[in-house]
Each structure stands twice: as structure tokens, then as C-alpha cells.
Length: 239
Image: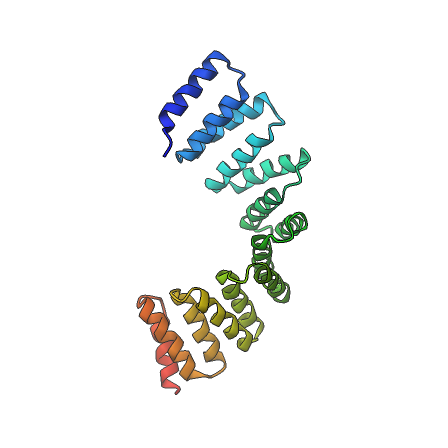
């Protein structure tokens, strides 16, 4: 771990000697962020940007601090500024997309994820987040396609299989949902929620024996999952 208090003291001294020392404000802000004090970090970033309104590094840092504080609207403004300064960076588009998604602007988020993918075609996280945004808009075939692409890039991405299963289930394709859940379970066998979803899909198919087995596995992993005992009882009563 770094010696943050001593680092801050030295940046304080540097700024006292040169009140226009942009890098000192920015780096002092970074140390505050590293120590978890994101509000103080933002104050330092504000000063650095006041002194140099085109300081790309500090805009990035301030956007990250805003994200940590869930100030997504302010984070978006910083990402807008970075892009306006001509920065073509996949991560910037990706992070702005996440902030847009969190504020419910799913269409705009998808555009940013697409831009991130254009700049970095193997960006499986961007495919995944694009899929989640499409799902939030009830565009399930589009979501499934994006989950597929995330999986093509990263075949061990358990969350993509799991969420693809949900998209298939909501679309009415329980058989494909179950196949996705099976793959997710093979990668993450100790997540009880996947077994619950699998059980729900079997229940829709009226395959109560397999539904009961899935619910039992979920209960073995976590007996306190809400409603799973009810679902198991329902499946058992229909065998």
C-alpha cells in the first residue's frame, strides 16, 4: 500500500511553491481517489482542469471519481469533453455507455458500445453491456445476438451465458435457455441463482422432475433464496 498521507503532504508543498502546478493538483486528486476520498479528489481535478481545460488525463480521472460516487451525469459530461477533445478511445466510449445505461438512456448507451466495439473488435465486455442494454429495451433477439458475440470472444464468460439464458426464456425459447444455463453452471457451479432460473425454465416446459432437481441444487447452495422452496414444492406436487 502507498503512503498516501505523505504523498499528499508533498503535493501540498509542491502546490504551495507553484499554485499553477497542474500535474500536482491532478496527482494529489489521484492519491485522494486511491485512498477512497473521491469527493476531495474531484476538488483537485476541478482545479487542474481550471488551469488546463484540455488536460485529458485529468478529465479521465475525474470521470472515474464521478463514477465511484455514482455521479453518472457528471461522468458523462467528462466523457463528452474527452471525446470532444478528439480522443478516440474504446474505453472512454465503453464507460460513457455504462453511465448512459445507468441513467436509463439505453439507445445512446448502445451507440457508445457499438463505437467501443468498432475501435476494439474483441471488446467482449462492450458486447455484453450492449446485450444488457438491448434486453432492458425488450429487444431480445438483439440482446441474444450481442451475448453470442461476447461469448465468441470469451467462451468462458459465465455471466453472458446466464443472461443469454434469461433472454431466451423471456423470448419463450426455454430449451435454449436451459442450454445457456447449463453452460453457465459448468463455468460457475456454485451460483444458486442459475439453478433457480434453470428450474423455472424446466417448470415452463412442465418437466417437473428436472425442475425439482434444479431447485434442490439451488437450496443446497443457499437455503435462504426467496421463493425457491415454494417453487420446489410446486414442482414436486406435479410429478
